[in-house]
Length: 267
Image (tube, rainbow, N blue to C red):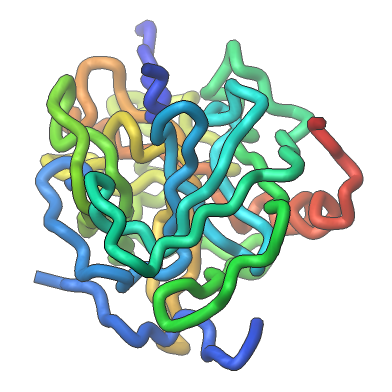
């Protein structure tokens, strides 16, 4: 059976305690989600070139994690402390991207091969405050339990073919373990161990959410970015048994560490 994948890009430590959030997220789109409480995901960034294209995650004052398939232009900036894209609300920080690092095994002709991950080095450090904080990353090799609750966040389409969200959206997506996600009536061989699946029913990420975080609360009360939003089924963002697929951050910790030492410059 041919599986059609759709990338989710839009083509057209400091004085703060990391990830014990000052503004707690609503737990009461993304598809079938809800508006996030402003600044409750302080590591969420908007990646922009000529227009907003993707999401991303601040992982250090001058480093942003995103999806490799998001990098299609040569000039980008990130917006931190963004909530409503239609107006400037005051706390936003606009910082140009200085260097881009794409995983060396990424193949833009084979999204299901994995390695959909990239790092952006900013031209200057972000100012950390109660609205802008770096995310915690999981330990190398860490896994998510089946049905572990996680949130995907972004400004992507509210439904397949629908309008993009104006304000940051969030949706609760339970993790789907690899044994389930790789079943033939789910994602089959398209689901790799270097990926994380989440959702698979009426809620999902959608076009424009690419590169953004899959946020999962750890047992220590901190939030960890366990995934980078990568692709959905070509038949629709919230197709049954086709959960949103994320690059599994825990599989790439050594590369992230090495990349921050600038071993793999893209430009």
